[in-house]
Image (cartoon, rainbow over all chains, first blue to last red; front, side, top):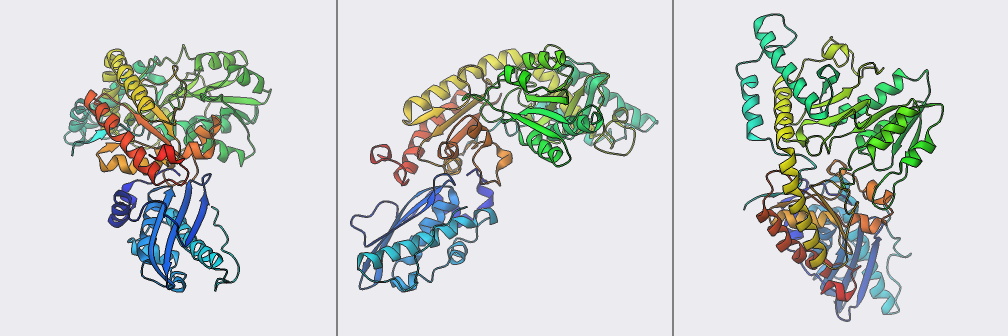
Length: 143
Length: 390
């Protein structure tokens, strides 16, 4: 996507773009979620490690704009220490708010972060042969 | 941190000599040029001098120059003004798929009001084929509008040839010369242009200034209604300090253009070849040779343009991804898509536009920073093959 310039982003978004937290593919993760589409300019991959239903580690790989990188980075921070079911309660709005807000045109990036997390949790349940608590599979977001 | 400004296609800094010329018209000479008293007439004289300077820059006559608020207004006026004035003759307008939004959106507006628009395709370099223009002309064609050079990828169009076709077929021809006036020789007669748009802030003048050249005898309606300024064609009290600055910028550009262009060619080619050499999976966009002396546009696979712009900005380097005017859009550049790029490649494009304040050290800074930044972003891109991310 084309840029909206640093001025449109909060200082915290800029900080996460400058120093993204938890980057990289995870070795033998317990759950992986991939969402987005290169045609739209954003692809997110989120990895979680789970012990006793608690997310002990999370990491990401993202192709996308500043907001996509910042929301991926923030969601990996927010999810650590939560149970897998608590992680499902993290909304896109919560991610955006934790970053000090996002420009309206970039809110879809926070939706992608929420969906990537949900997919990773869903994948965790699948790997364990369990049914996820949220019924049907997460539908991929297109914009 | 020293600012490395390589976004001159978006806007140029104001030349200090331009600022010096403008200051008296912000302080002492505040009269309204329409007033008959001496305070007004002194200012009128300055506006007319500036008109002569802009005319000299593009080879027109002073009484064929109409000041506007910028390139966007000039483009809109050329298209809508011609459409309304010539609607009794026909309703067909020909333009290209790589025009600036000021032209494309004006065409969208006209298409909602009964006009038929032909958007001509371009080749992979963004070049229009004059043959296609010729074939597109119908008895209902009233206007052909083609930009002189593309603002995103820098490709220079064969406008003189297209203008010849327009003239032979009795169709009016408009040239958007916003990216070329003041940077390359522009002559309304050799381009066979009936109308030509110019912008002040792209040639080291102030923002909010521009002009539309309208060849004597060309029928065109006004966009605005009001007083009799600009010979009744563009009402509204003149932006005197801006016009004076625009005129000064035009004078400077005309006298310094040749030497400046030669200097920019060297800087441009060094930047382009070094980046393509040092960064694997990178591709130059636009025509390799027939391009603006100050434009470098490259697509970097597996990374996204805004992230590149932000990371460069962290190091004090200003660049752009595609057109700065589309900054609130999520769509990839319509220009790169028209050149046949896939959306993914178009998303990863970066434009550097050099200017007269660009120095060798600025180019060095980009050559040092960008390979590192691309590597960093590829390392976190799920699209990058492992080898490219290392």
